[in-house]
Image 1 (cartoon, rainbow, N blue to C red):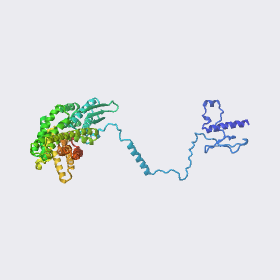
Image 2 (image 1 turned 90 degrees about the vertical axis):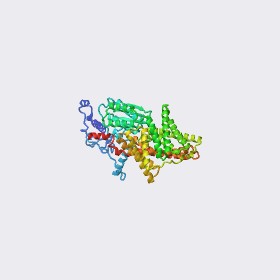
Image 3 (image 1 turned 120 degrees about the vertical axis):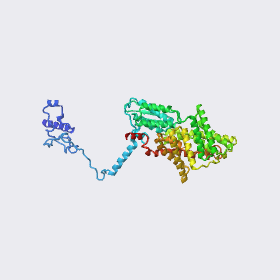
Image 4 (image 1 turned 45 degrees about the vertical axis):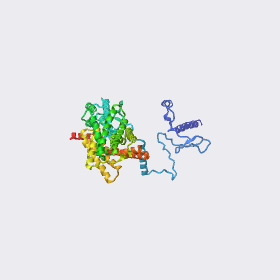
Length: 577
């Protein structure tokens, strides 16, 4: 009986160790050496004791014996229980009822899910990091400085000197009237040519900021604020040529600094007295072009000369441009009304319109429109605001002049008499060319650019008259003429070594609605019975002015595919031949 109980206890211990996945052979070796007679699990038979559950090998569940009572008698012999390391037990899969099995997605649904995930990834995550440096090639594409020749020597040894030089170039271009896009492309072209590629450029109205952030180095940030402007299209053309030579690889940094200093210190191509006289010539020619008599042209020239002299004196007194412009507009109005009161055969409205055309900030409007279209909204807003104040100064000056005329007893409703000049078309074309060359002199354009700019203006006149003859409309005709002028201005300007702005701004001036502006101001200030007509007239005139500026910018963009061989690439191809 003791032997049986001993066998039962050993069998129970063996069964318990087998359930826990532990064999007797896993014991400590020291203990094995101390008990050499320890039975092995694979060598002992499994004895089913009384009231001891035996694990079911198939399901892993314990089963109780079928009967209870004495354990005497022959006990059934079971095969050895396999060790866990002998054969892995497969995971039991429960049967799925019929009709409830999951359906596999079709191939079309899988493709649509992949496309949806790809689209969601594009919406959530951009193509490139938002703060990564700009791509040099991408920003210079389409500009005259595409594909710059990089001077690899000394990339980081004098990075600060290169950045300061790029700021000097940007400041000079801004002072001379360049647009923000042209300034940005010039900065990128200069820095890339001198070996700096990891840069960011930020142009905000009057400030230019350049950040050079090469990986694993301390970044360098420089900024410059432009606080003054001047008319110097000749200097702008020289800076354009300098940047082109730098991009072509023919000018080093030291020579480039000397040339830029020479450009900024060089006197303007026309002295001040000649520029003032050219303003008088422009006013007389444009008044005659609009249909004014010879006397109206002479009065327009005299009034504009006085405007230039008074403006020069006020500039010495540090008078703001707003008041200088307003005083000039008032002077032009007073002169026209004065000669009208003296019974000189002229049309005061045409004389005043000539003065308004001379004072309108055409270059600023074109640059502002270009900046707005090319992605510089802050700079465009600043320039538009400046142009708006100039326009307001013109309106205020004309209004003061008209009110002064009513106080002196001049019959203002008769200022709208038509001019007595009726000239052949050839004479009108010559007058336009003279006016364009005169305004180029006031803008200080290079001497060799006068005649090509006048030719571009003449081409715009032909298209303008053709659109009017076709009956398309007098609102559309100025915009179409501006597109042609902007298109030809880019081609002619790049061939002559100048940016498009130098040619397009003087050539587009005759399209501006100076007479409509005067009529609107008259309705708004003098004719108090219908002020709403004056407001509508001013709105229409501003719409036409913006359409002209937008047309010039559109022509510039349309001409880009035809100017890929001009600018910086032309000299490089010549050297490769």
